[in-house]
Amino acid sequence: MAGSGRALLFDIDGTLADTDALHLKAFNQVFGPHGHIFDRERASKELMGFSNASISERFLPGHSPERQVAIIAEKEETFRKLASGQIQPLPGLMRLLDRADRTGISMVAVTNAPRLNAEMMLMGLGIMHRFKAVIIGDELAHGKPHPMPYLEGLRAVGAAPGRSLAFEDSRSGVQSASAAGIATIGIRTSLGHDDLVAAGAVCTADSFDELELIRLVGATMNW
Image (tube, rainbow, N blue to C red; front, side, top):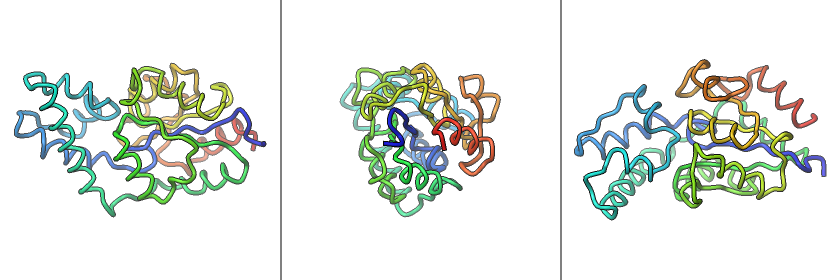
């Protein structure tokens, strides 16, 4: 197969579609009564890309584990309601996925989001069928920024890190993919170029139709 040993691995929120504003609204609706209000800058540093388990530990330490789970579940349900019918792919994404399909390159989604959210997003974008695997950080022993989610993504499709690329919008995500040995392109939906490069990104882009991104993907995928 043309794509043997190669893979494109994508974070979902903020990478396939810019959903950070919807997550921020959901967090503030649900976490506000518990004393936590976030602006976009704070959310990008303290929420986006982190697992729900780590968010609970940090912001809901006074609640029982059961109550923490219930509060997080309320936030995610609020997000899904806000996002329903509102999800649009970043520019250039569909062309990239089409090219990967035509050339036999495996695609994997790697996220710290709950599976319900991940599947809602992928189905809402109409691209669920394109992904050979959907790796959920909270279903593993370690989520991002640990490399385990991306290592599991590579394992799921038999891909080599040096022949693959990852796409991420958060510090924890870039750190996770980079630690797994995968060259990572930072998507600038919530963080700027300098922050993403500092986390380990090899380059950054606003969308999937930027020339530097297209060139790097083509060279790595042997297109």
